[in-house]
Every structure is written in structure tokens, then in C-alpha cells.
Image (cartoon, rainbow, N blue to C red; front, side):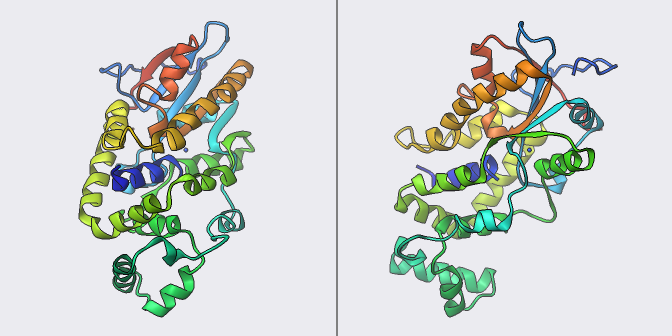
Amino acid sequence: MDNMKITITFILSLLFFSFISEPIPSYPNNNQALLWKVKHPNNSSPSYIFGTMHLIEKEYFFYPKQLKRLIQKAPTLILELEKTPESKDILKHTQLKEGNFFDFFNTEQTDSILEWAKNKLNMERQVFRSVFYHTKPFVLSQLAMQSLFIGKTESYEQKIYQYAKEKNKQIIGLETIDFQLSLMDELPQKDQAKMVMDIINKEQQIKNDLKKLQKLYKAQKIDSLNIELKEEISPNSNFEDLFITNRNNNWIPILETAFQKSSCFVAVGAGHVGGPKGLLRLLEKKGYELTPIYLNNK
């Protein structure tokens, strides 16, 4: 299992109507789009699904009027989480209940981490030991991962949360922050450790992968993005089932119930949308008609 690619997948996966007056352009390649109209014959109005990157460099972030209009018109917004998580809700899942951070690593790995922390975080060894002693490894994974993004970053979910708050719009959350953060505990300790070490030791390669993923995203190539995210995950690992497939299956009944009540705008990580086990294919099997929508980036 390539934990470096898995780490990117985890970050991207956790960490975003018929009354429009003008016609919506179709995407030239029917298998590629970030935004999709989904409609069941038994429902009076369509809903929309948009694949996000939870954290993206400003260079690749686009939020066109076409997308804003759909969000504004939607009676119901559906995101992975109902609200921006509070620090206290996150903090309780970052602390180990037993043992310590360094139990996950051998002596050589620990030395590499401490040296990296000194160079990248400006933290002396004893300070790092004190700060991270009771912390789960995924905290350092995310901290290290976020440091690899170049320049300013944006968040689609944050944009949508901000708009919903300003307009008092209702948001339906597909999951709780407690559930999302508990997923990392399901990974074996050796995989959690390797995730940290890969980010520390393969910084340039990860930066290159991130750049490639963000370029695919801005090109609105949802299936290509899905393939790139999953191509190096071992078929013998349970990572895809744990972080992607099972969650997609859990979301479908929630989405169908909401779609039956009103038009909805759904924004979830792009890794959940495309691919043979993605939301689009699952909805298609339920009888929904899928229409790709090309965003003109204006």
C-alpha cells in the first residue's frame, strides 16, 4: 500500500436547478465533470452534486458565478459535516488513550521525525517530545501535509458554510466530526507510522503529486482524479473501503431522502464522486439520470 498516496486521499476526502433562467452547457467529455445534475423520474426537481477539494492552492481554486447561483438557489445544502468543527471537538480525537506517539515508531524513525521537526517546525527535540507525546500520528501527518501546499489556500466547504450562515440556509451533514476522526484509529499502527514517514521523507514527490491532482481538478476531470487517487492503493488493503466506499454507501440513503423532499446542492470531496464505487454510479444504479455540467470558470 502506498501510504503517501493514501495520505493525500485522506486529506482530500476529509478535510465542500431547474429554475435557472439560462441553459447549462454540457461538458464535452460525458465522463468528466466536477458538477453533475442528478434527477430521479419520481422526483419533481433535480439536485446537484459537486466534487470539492477540501484544501486547494489559490491558483487552482475557482468559484464561478454558475456555481454560486446553484448554491444560492438550492433550498437545501448537503455537506460532509453540518458545521465547521470546533477545536474542542477535534482535540478530543487527537489524544491517545494509552501509550504515546513514539510507540508507533522505531528509533531511526523517531530521529528522522525529531530532525524534521527542528528544520520545518523550528521545534527542539525536547519541545517536540513534550507537545506530541500523547498525540495521535495523524495529527503530525496533517500538519506536515498542509505545509506542502504552496502559497495561500482556499476551501470550498468554508465558502459554502460562510454563505449558509449569512443567508440562514439549512445544511444537512452526512457525518459527524467524531465519526470522521475516528476512522484513522481503524488503520493498523504500522500504516499510521508509515504515513508520517512518507510525508517527511518524500516531500518533493508529494508536492509533485499534489500539483498533478490540483491540475486535474481545475481541468474538471473527475474520473481521472479518482483514478489517480486510487491507482496505488493495494487491493489487499481496507483503506478504500474504510475511507471511501463504505462512506459512499452510507450516504446514499441520506441523499435519496433529501432529494425526495426538495432540490439539493451536495458538496463532498471529489474522491467520493467519480469512479465505479462513487456516488454518481451508486445513484445511477438507483435509477437517477446523470447530466455532467461544465463550469466555465467565470
